[in-house]
Image (tube, rainbow, N blue to C red; front, side, top):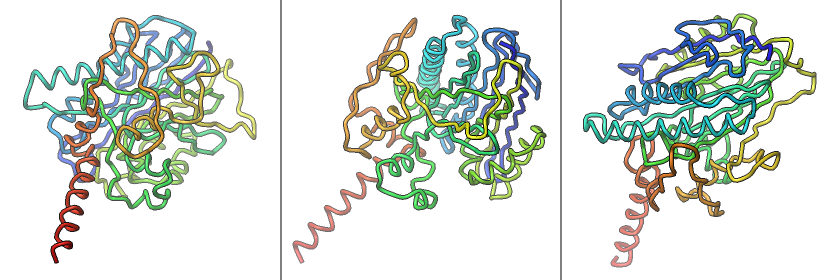
Length: 363
């Protein structure tokens, strides 16, 4: 596969936080090299680059430890995984690597009470031929800029995203919701995680962005699009960080930009639109591709944000056996962590309302 990838990454503490709990890792799986700086990667092997952005949970001890450990374990697992030109094999490898990272974070927390309860989000991308496969847990994001149009190719596993999808609030209301920043799951929050896998067919000139919510939580999609509409990838990365800080810099901000060129990539047509496509673990072949986030809807149902039932998650494969998640464990995790708190607050609201009604009956 003749594919050239120009990669630039930035990670900034922002203007409010005392330390940077984000982690960024960029590696070339063919050369087995971790890239410490911006680089042009010639992908003529089967594998190509691995891109990872992790956002340690703010306000929880060990967020930086969790994000660094997640990036390290995912990289090690993907580096050791089987070489294949089959996108389904790559997707299963990504899913297994993220689930193993979750296991390692949970184990590290159990071994050290100072970081017990630590967690992190993750957005990771790997490539096979002209396809990008993305693994997602939490609310970090991936976008692709094509023909100056920006498309989000992951779905946030967050409370406000679930409420929007369920029709409970509008997109505009979500921007000002008090629940912004609360996520439905994170690595380290429970014994197992639901990994969302999305896929995108790349074109020559496409620019992929992975970012933490320190960017997309501060800067609109239009602002992100405008900053990316340049041939200067270094300048685009710096501009994105600057925009987040100009908006208040309330969180750490991390970005990885990757622009794809090469003789084997087809040029994008004028009407060549990119759409979100998730891989359904329960299906095989073309039927496994869906434009609905099955994982996101299942997580929302477990948290009580949707009424439609969805099947249980598919067990893990290969050397990492499935870990059965106890009923209600997702809710307990949501109540436990500062970014995972909606069930806790709903319970308080219900109890308060019951007490008020009881008082009114005595009046």
